[in-house]
Length: 227
Length: 298
Image (tube, rainbow over all chains, first blue to last red; front, side, top):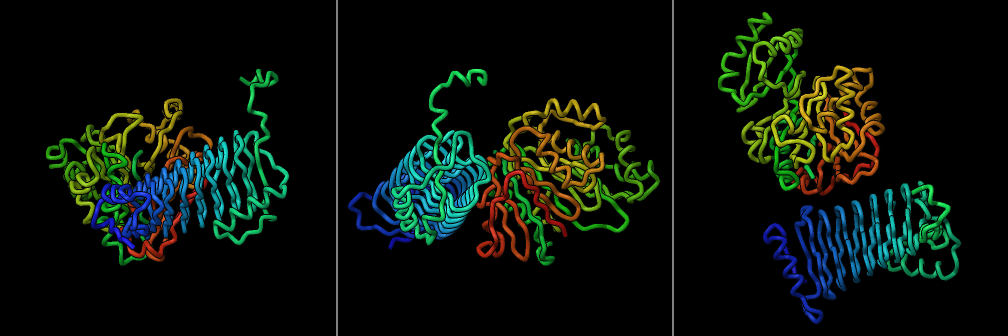
């Protein structure tokens, strides 16, 4: 286990050190102490290493992650795991705005609540939130899965493409073109696997599936008056 | 961007350290806005006197005989405590209106930063650390305070464009964001007789709250109606004699973090601003909800 103290060393040194780890590195476990809300901690990693951040972080923690497993023992600011490609990011506390935004792959787990715009424009990432999510979540979400064990805020899934949304609690309102959908066996199986990976004991049967009504995909002449 | 910090103390033993804690929080937010900085401190109340905080770019001349000159006109004892470009005038409570009228004749160039029983507002162009040092903010004690560091978007970088803005006796407002209907609202408020000095959007927000409260709204009601009438982005933190409040617009893209313990309630644009507060590791930390008015009172 390598320990890196952000009070003793600066952020650039931390990220450069983590970037220097190659796929076959022997230094696979990293412990970051005194994050003190700093921005851009463990950004741009691309090696199968495990990074534990002992405390809360600021903006863009674990952004652009590939391969690595990042666990934050606290809460994170805006843009956690933004544009993640692969790997796993686990937040023990809450996440601020646009968690997992534009993510292409990997798994983001938020054990507390996520605020607004969670999973905005997601492109293949899987996101599991143990608590609630805020408004405008999964806006223009293209693919991947957003699982919410609590409640969702206003305008869930507005202008949604093909991402799948599962919410256990209430949805304050659905966004344009987002509708409730039938839960089929393959959805239950997919949900079960994601909940297990995210260490949630929620039951797949308790969730409702939401998806795109696919009415905004193409120009519809009947809507011409609205433009 | 802009950075906001706020600290509302529940534990009286922390009051001597309010200025020091708030300064540390504000300096941490420097990279959110390097243009100007300001701080509102709610200090000790005097039974019979009110405070008028004034600013002058030519303090040496304007403040030299101000207390005597003002006292002679209003027929009362006035004392003055100068700090750099600002001065706090201590005026008998029943003479405060007369003093404000007299000041406009005696020192027309002087700007009134704040008025009230306990509030003092200090603000200038420059970095938070420099502004705080000019006014010895870290030496100040008090019950609660608000700080702001500005990245200017809607108006020039000037002292009067700096935050906090006074919204009435013992009240102030700081803002992160930008209002898009401030020009039309300014015209409307001016027609209603509200004095607005600058082209700044936040001053219009402050004037709007002042106007609503003149119409009989409480501050909470005025903040509620601001969600309807103000168009644009805002995280507002407001100070009153007894407490402070927070409201974010419905989109809520301007960041906000709050922390509460038995000793204090704290606000920061980022968690970084809160990390040196005592017991922060055990504090209840959360993000305030959009379009929701929060308030804490002593």
